[in-house]
Length: 248
Image (cartoon, rainbow, N blue to C red; front, side, top):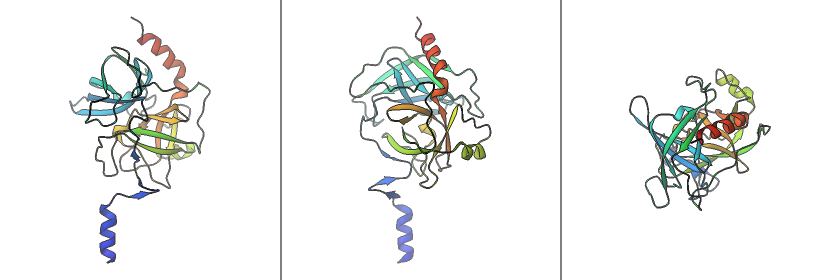
């Protein structure tokens, strides 16, 4: 009997708190209308996907390491296998941070200029950005959403979300070479072992309806803590870059 119980536990989804599972739960459809689904080809011509978020009607923010060929942005999507509410908009221009390092993922931020403005409705809306002086502190619990890997590294069709806690910077300094607390946020919750996956890259770390971070360094096997880009430290660069991108 004991062996049978162990077997059942191993094949059933791990859950607590009424169905909450590791690597998040399915989000309420269209409860995060700022989310963008990004598809592209990498240098080896493999199809990749990332998350992103709408910060202006024609500007999507994501991680710089999500850059690739033939990038396409889909807004208003919950289930990527359905297309009832979506807006698919080609990308006109891309701008990676000039000091982005693809090895250490320092300055992992990118802006995408869409060919046309998105139509705001109940499925598509922008999200607010922080002010330069905003600073999310250790202990703050915020939310990440995306279409990233599940516990077994399989990819879901529906948007999922998970609550994660800001950690003391020392945790990330011990685990990640070159961690910089000024431009990055140490995020996770080691006790609960929640994490984001590769295809959550570029998604927003949302605190009180403000995008405070961008999913950057992560792993679907649950390596915790993780490193997110700290948006408030890039506000001057963001404002300057949006003006440049929006010029005719």
